[in-house]
Image (cartoon, rainbow over all chains, first blue to last red; front, side, top):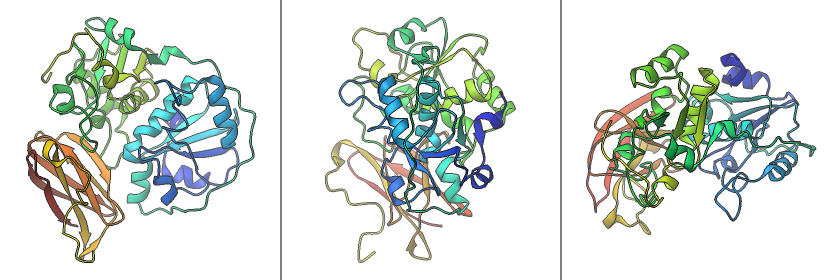
Amino acid sequence: MSRSDVLVDADWVQAHIDDPKVVIVEVDEDTSAYEKNHITNAVRIDWKRDLQDPVRRDFVDQAGFEKLLSGKGIANDDTVVLYGGNNNWFAAYAYWYFKLYGHRDVRLLDGGRKKWELDSRDLVEAVPTRAETQYTAQAQDTSIRAFRDDAVKAIGSLNLVDVRSPDEFSGKLLAPAHLPQEQSQRPGHIPTARNIPWSKSANDDGTFRSDDELKEIYETAGVDLSKDTVAYCRIGERSAHTWFVLHELLGQQNVKNYDGSWTEYGSLVGVPIELGAN
Amino acid sequence: MCGAKAGGPELAGVDVASETIIQGSLTRDGEPVSGYVRLLDGGGEFTAEVPTSATGQFRFFAAPGTWTLRALVPGSTVDRTVVAQRGSAADVAIAV
């Protein structure tokens, strides 16, 4: 798989903006951003309302995902291009989620909404209409999803990559600094985790660094890429961004995203926690 | 801005006493400007990033210490250093 199979630039999107088999999807941390404006013909997926079970802390099930994508007018053979704000955090989360349910052709817009805006490209208010489809999802591919027991078992054996900011890793902050500090019960990180913030893999404009630069970042940080890797952050969105880097850009097949992440691990009773920097 | 205080958004409803707040506004030629603001820690590492509001304002919940704010707008990047402390919001007006 090459980089262009999973990542497209703004010119590519501009050239396919009216292609009926390309569905542009905005997924933002700020779920109201789409209402202000969005890329022409883009539909919205709300990561809170559409992708989470309304009662339990978990994803919508296979039937729920089928219903969601059918309603959005996305067919199994469509190319889905995801983009969003905040350096594509939630677009990458949606990318991983689409792969979890087996969508064949998903791509990220490099740099997401931010680069599109900084380049002063057109954004519109018009909401497109797409005919409903009969989408068929696969069972969840748990080879790319880690659960809490996987995270505990990984201590001292697998690569644990904590992609939060250094201050969250060390225990100084409980959450990203644009959110009130009221998340897990305890600060810190999973013992033996390496702190490689997601942001090291992106340029200021949100685009991904080159493959060679990305490899160097992980190797310099002491991650043995031949071993299985579990990536985590606070709720699994930034670690989906790192999962995208490791699994999709660098082609490492043995990488899982732990979406329970620190809000789950940091509230578990009895598990080991470390404080301080690497 | 109709007499609004230069700097960040209103603090009504925010638990200022227990938070360490860094906030402010982006302006170009005195007018609010849309863009992004990144918060970098003492080591220059990315900590958070927010888009500015329609009135050019932004806010972070951080920890006490010295931080760098990096404003990103079309065609321009501006850095500002700010010292934050718990219990009072650090207000930073950034002209780009």
